[in-house]
Length: 585
Image (cartoon, rainbow, N blue to C red; front, side):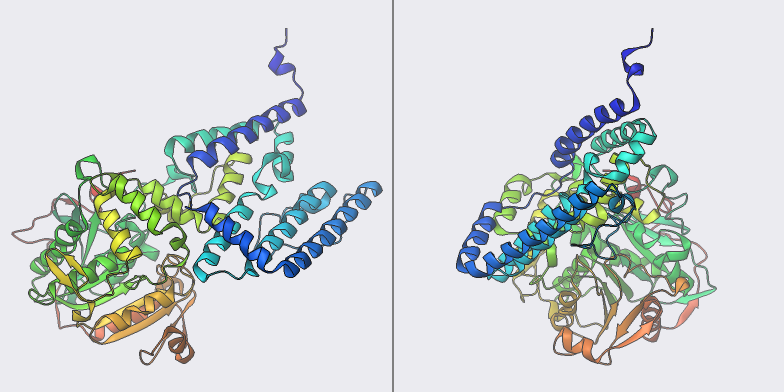
């Protein structure tokens, strides 16, 4: 006898799967993949209500226009439905932006009900954004309210729910519900991981097809491994180059593959390259502090690189949080015990935290004090938590497309090494993270001379008296470029500022070999970022070439490339990329 399950027709199977999918998606994704939850929603709703009451006529006009558009949209759908002409496009009341791919499939316009859902959603989203944009609020409160409204609008898209997405329904019917079952399996797998899969992770292996530039670990302690890379030129610059990546991500964003590796680019230009690989923090290191990251991390790496390289000084590059760490170290040691550094490069680095961009919506006094109570005395801050917070800033790019494709359509995401790296997070120690939030983000004390004490030394950025190359990315939502520009006014020495196109990662990792995008250079440092930009000129291609030429112009003489890695005191421990980078959250 045919079983009850097999006796169900395909439509029944689909409807059953839809119910299960909706329930699981709403219950689990929101609860366990939601990342940071913004604080003080009620406060901002109160601000919203008060601002509306102050300008009732404008609000009434906005409401009236919204109802008129909704009525027109409803009549269009009724007229189309009565005519039974699904192939005829409904007159457009609300249109998606050209870059919005959520509704690009023909099914969204071919059937009246889905065209109505699409346009009603877009109309309501525009109405909410206009309503918030017209409110007279204090700028910081308005920025947060606009962020929360955008998060709500993005989350409520009909594309995000199986019952209101015609692509999902078509695929479910065609597969007899199997696509939804596959999607639920993908969802449960990701819930176990605690993060959304953005790529086919089975394709990649660190040290096998990513992070493969030859080299060796020549030093390690509890916090870092120091990698030295094998030379590819017969002569090298006498001064070695040390790269300090951010500690909240794995270092291999700087060495994804040979064609876009900043590490390989520097090696091939004739530099002896060293790189810090930060430890993925576990319970045994839950008490590590910011001072430890300075002393055991940055300072130790600088002195070891100088000792192995055999030169009096080194060239130093810090990327993102790595740039804040190296700047803090240089400024702390400058007065009494200067570190052996000849040039400094800061890649997408904040030293002035007056404007931190949208990540600031998560960082307020109440949030920091709450986190301090939880982690300041010793804890592990999960890398998944940090990654989701940053992803939520661009939810329509980094969260919802994967929810739809992975969970609703049952697809496996394509292989992409950058997204593999993005999902390979790093845990942080609670005391270090709490100190970072409090003193840099909340109190903005790094920019204040002698306001901070690090490793027993007062920190004054103006004591950094080195030739410094400051790079920022124009569309960076993590390190706003105008905030990065403020670094030129805080540190001493001769400064060069360069602005790259694109965002935090694509702008930074822009290899010369592909000659993509552009960058802006200025003849001199101006009073503010806008003035600098008005006087800057655009250059085609990668900023790496400009940086390489700047470094060469300040370089020392050439010497014969080392025949072996390390030296008598620091012998190779294991091949690059080393063990520390393999630790998973």
